[in-house]
Length: 402
Image: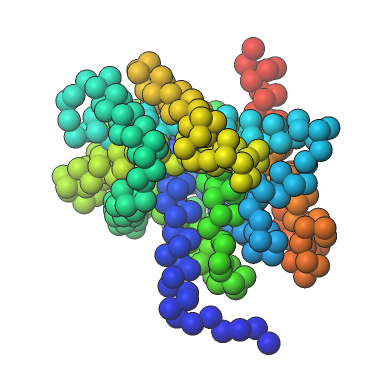
């Protein structure tokens, strides 16, 4: 008979797993979802809903592996591919995650600075430099948790603003149902479709889920994770709906205008600070995630990969540096951010395939925690759809746009 989870445990689990939606509702989600709504209405809602389902399926598998085996996802990869002939597999996985983190970091910096530019007239280079110094100091000292919680709270309130404005959107139930359950890829939307996947699922969040699950029961984990992802999904849909109300050329300023029209001038200020908070918190998370991935895959308990080691700091330093470089180049934030999400959408199948292999390995997991047929079909479908979208985008770039 299944154990009943107490109300307190449910609340604690939800609070713990709330870091997952906080991690994926960053500048990438704001830019990609709102741009999808502004440019294509509800036509891409199906892609967003698929991404939310994919997030839940893959995150649950990553967390289940840790609870059942007592090892993190990176640790399992390190053990499973420990031989000299398998080193390339570990390098491939680390390379995919680190490259994805660097792409996200470019979007994080550009998004955070875009938020500040809605509130101030300071030069972009000054804002980028200040943000880089603060992020580097936090990463160097490890003093991240308190500030991250505060910034996540600001992002939460920004999400409430989007939800309040979305409720005013004049959308019929029929339009909503058609967008949700009739998949279509309108001309020019290809990058946005794969971007919606990349900004929601977030490959490095699979390693985050693996670490968060430690110390929980399986039922607690599923409850907290499921509800947290659902909340994040509702906010993402709200952001897409607000995009419908953007008039003229799409930009963060135009999006702020839509929020102002819906709720008043204060909404623009909260959006600007919320966008900054989302980018600032993620500009610490992405470099740290890359370094932790390297630590778990290559280092284990090795001092060469401790939090204060040269290797660890080199990884987060390179990822942070790449983001700052893109911020100083003065690129248009929206196209750059959406491209970063699409890159991660293309990289996702690499990580997801190894997760699927690991969750079926009876040498790692007790039999009752190994994937059943239904979960394999669901995970397999997620991998196939994302891979197909990636191949389709590459084919268009190489052969139709050349």
